[in-house]
Image 1 (cartoon, rainbow, N blue to C red):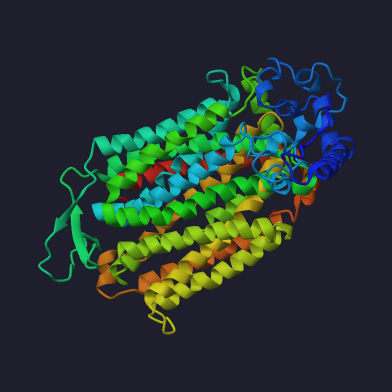
Image 2: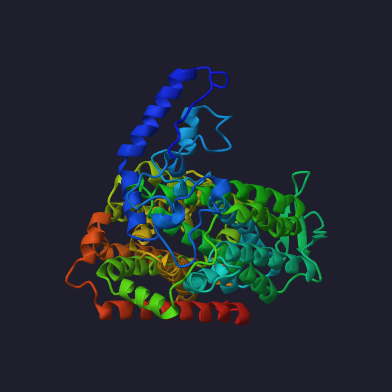
Length: 614
């Protein structure tokens, strides 16, 4: 069954020489690779990895495990659990549509032969996963500039601006529910791909509703050739280089309706994102030890690349053609995923654990010290990352930043976020998790403190825009470096068979902490007077105090850094610790997580409906 590989000299100028080299390499891989040996062991003990070892595309359905069965005897009925699996089923790049297009050294980069086929993301049956991450980034990039300035155009209060900016991320707090539902309830016979399709359809429908039931056009305003001091009007750069002033159309969406559509929008793409996360959490366990974390870093690189590329495009489209075109694109792009989801391979009609068994598995997981201690740090640290909710209003009302300048800051922030992720993937991945947090948090404190100098008018000869640009965007670069260590840690914590709910729960801890930090930033507006009227009168003392206070809060997260393990090896030691299995720790972990979700939702909705602190 392990047929030899041969390359015709007529198709390859190197002829038999390269053929023998490749055959020798793959024969060595077949018989000696520890990856293959480990894979056989996993298939033999029925741990679930067998669902991802399959032959070429034509045989996928034929070799799919029957309902209720696992292991190599199911995937390969003629093979015993200890038999050698054919190398072309494992990873050979020659069994791809690209084998006649690219030379072998490129194929090896695209389809690494030392990796199982299940984690080779460019395979047709896996391509939906990186595409899902890429589309999440594209949708965030397209919607970011719109959400950054359109609420200001509609006259939203400061509290509403903060809440609207985060409301499309509000459904991320329900990731646990999304993952648990997909783990337990099959849709059209599948746990992941059907829900992924449903999520993207919901995303598109929300934007279609916004286009259908409101007028997103901008009405030009004649300002008589003078400066526009009316903050209720909006201005943008015209085609002749001069400012053109606009006001909302008569049937423009209300803040409440806009928020509702963004909530539906966020629900759809976060639902689809959870399905992508679940598939990655399952496949990441098949990665060889030496490349562990590569799968996640690749997927998140796709996501932040899409974010980086589409944000400037969205800014140009918004400034030139208005918000309506941006919303049309947001309604169109989700449909691009349909053919990729169709080709996504997933076992159909599998036997799933009972809800009781899944809940018991999750409970045992959260009671482990390897879970509640490091995730406790992640929660506390992110709750303390409280931003200055009046900062955007200060930039617009006091420093007179235009909408184009605000979006430029957002674009550069996205670029540095991507650069931060890439920097971790290729350099900081060798650093301990604690060192990364200490390094990035300390630098963030320095750059946050520089905002006080900007408020006092001390910019060292730089324009306020350039100075503010450096202050704001560097934090996103540091955030990109911090992002991957926590996600890699979360995958190591997921129990086999409950990856969807477990990984969603861990990411929910991170998201609900960030959501609570956003809520706290809104509530801090009540301590000092940082209203638009007060700042316009020349009193910036409240702004200075609020900036200093939020910087101290953000830096104080380092007080808890010893809760975080240095490496994944230390994480494994925590699992065997005497305090592992603590029901008290598990109960506190779940109680704080669920109460944070509830409070963030209630306060966020209150700000949208009532206007919050004005």
